Image 1 (tube, helix red, strand yellow):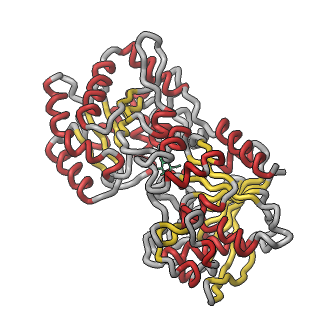
Image 2 (tube, rainbow, N blue to C red):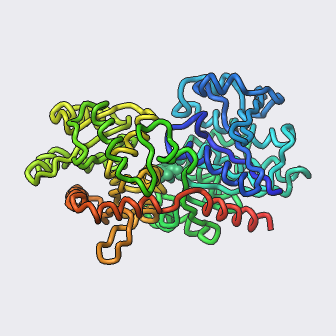
Length: 483
Ligand code: GLC
């Protein structure tokens, strides 16, 4: 049986700030269903909900070398939904609020990466493949090369590194190379972890892993270009033969409008009209004007510039005015947190347009699902998007995506074509506020053509973004690596 260990800083439902957590919380489940022994290892953060902590079982403890020091490391185990999760325990590093963003993150995640490798023979799980995700796990393959490759039990292990977001690389002063990672200076070179005279965790993952993947085919191409490459495009071009794009899926058991007990009325592809009942319930709940015929546009996102909030800020009020003139009194529902600037902006417009705009500056999974089930359109105008999860959930709930044609959005949303009846959403090519608002207006016009609109809703719901295909693609890479 193929054995794979996922290494990541997030995994839903234990620790999640974004799409990374969703992926680590769901892909192993599908792999398991397909016969792979997939397990997950992550830090034992303070913020993991108490109800899970209580069920964790102490497995073993040992010490981990961090530079010249030896640090305590405990391993806790919890089998959740059929998947074995291991938690790396060290109170000094992880008993703090939040997951990352601390001054000593190099040491925290340097320790984490080393602890993962150190744990394998102690938890009695020597995987065929260690599958590392994003910069926090970047040093696993480097440390493997330096300190573990020669061990007989470890010598067959292969490493795969997945990029979820190239923008966050984990860059730290070069001194950590020796003081924290106990690495020889030979690793500090162009083809190694060196990046502008500093140590780059992500680059380490890219340089020393056997294979590299990212979360959509288009993003795999884009990051080889300087515009999206975050200064690593040249390096990625060098490794392009080892770089593949596999689109993310979502957990179809959890996200299912026919079963989701968090939404008001269940429906499926044959009963899409029931979305209107969800809409009315949500309108009441959020204090919007109650009217099932008014188109509702949802924005469920981190409220930060590159998610397209800068475009919205520029054109939002004009758009609302324009919609009123055209008698397209669409309602807009926002859910998310992020930069104070955008949080305040949406609060302000919601105050200015009561009944039409609802700004929910928080994150709440139940409300998110109610929004997906109620809204007619889902807006995601990202500057760049490695994959994007929101549009996938939206489609599953028959909420038609309006997206920029970029990265994973391009790979998952196809513009609706009235001639052929093919397509599951609306798209626009440039990162431009007017192009975005024109596209929204086109969607609103189409909305009033009930027959056409329903076709798009059904096409969206019929688009299959479960993990089934993508998990098979991952299996292929695993198998190719282990030969
Ligand atoms: C990151 C990316 C997002 C992707 C997610 C999971 O959050 O920004 O596009 O869907 O990772 O891979």
